[in-house]
Amino acid sequence: MKKIVSSILLIVFILGLVSSSAYALFSSTATVSGLTFSTGSADLKISIDGNTWDTTFEPVSNYTNMAPGFLGSQEFYLKNTSLSNIGLNIFTKLIDNSPASNSSSWSVIGNKIIVSFQKYNGTTWIDLASGPISQWQTTGFEIDSISYGNSQKYQMKVSLNGIDNNDTGQTLSGLSFQFLGTQQ
Image 1 (cartoon, rainbow, N blue to C red):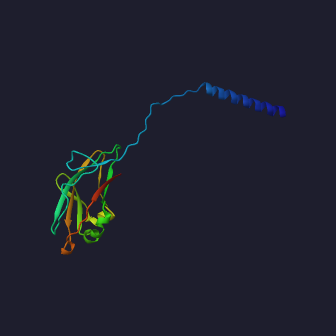
Image 2: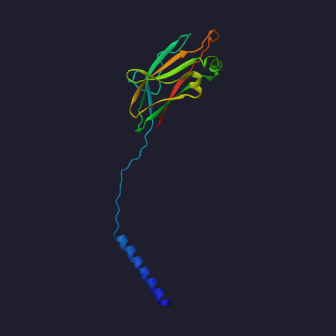
Image 3: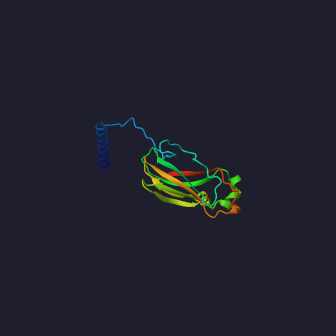
């Protein structure tokens, strides 16, 4: 009985050895070479004229010596120049670059200066978001979305609400609106 089991194991071993040898004789390899992998990026640009694009621009005029009834505006463009084929959701927030010098004025005029953003649709301006600059500073707003490779014309409107004689001489300076484009 022992010889029979040993013979069967020897036959199985020889069959396995022959099968693996035959498999090795009938195999082939093909290779894909010269591959490059590259990631893209999200990229948002801003322009005052819709022709020259950058990451920053200075407004045409600053908003100084404002009085009751003041209304000012600034047109600008945003463009999705991403390397990747992605749409961007546009979020904007007011950044205070001079918090020490502005600290006392925020409580006096921060809720009285109103900023609104509008989008031009080819014939009219469409309201996107509006609020006091204190809200733009603390929470900001998502204002729009821009598809890959496209640009959009916007308008920032500045007005006053509830300014009186007690508010004279107040200044908030070194402020910047930061526009952040994130993938949709």
